[in-house]
Image (cartoon, rainbow, N blue to C red; front, side, top):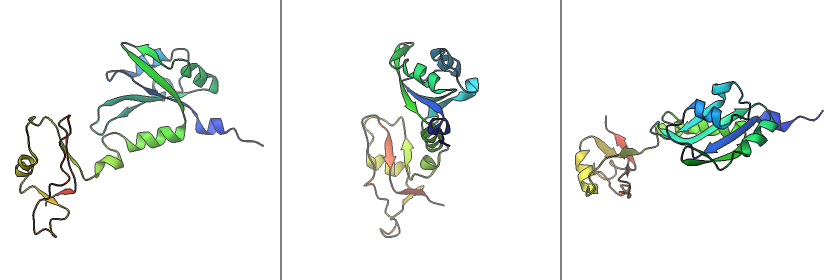
Length: 169
């Protein structure tokens, strides 16, 4: 007896380019030609580490025919945005949903402190001074308590990543 690998992997599509304010109902309307498994429960949004919508989602469908219909929606528009649709599977969906979002194991203890809304001219030294007494480097013992700033970066979007920092307790 041959096993149908398609059914074991499920009938899943990944959607990219959704408006951030997109609702489950809007995704259902977008895929109105398709039967979504368990209705609204079959639509799984992907969130950023900050807990905001990423503009991506998975849709679990009922059959291979529904996947084919969904793929025909690739590059159609939702509002002012064009939406990309890709074939996926349960394995990819489960992995992505487990490893994204604010409570994922990958982001919970990644060793980074993220700062937003900093003044444009903010320097590394000002950030270190702001956190003085609160943070210690993972190499602080070797460096006799000095806070290392080598991992600090100020990208264009003013997001600061402080590497190798742990809360002192």
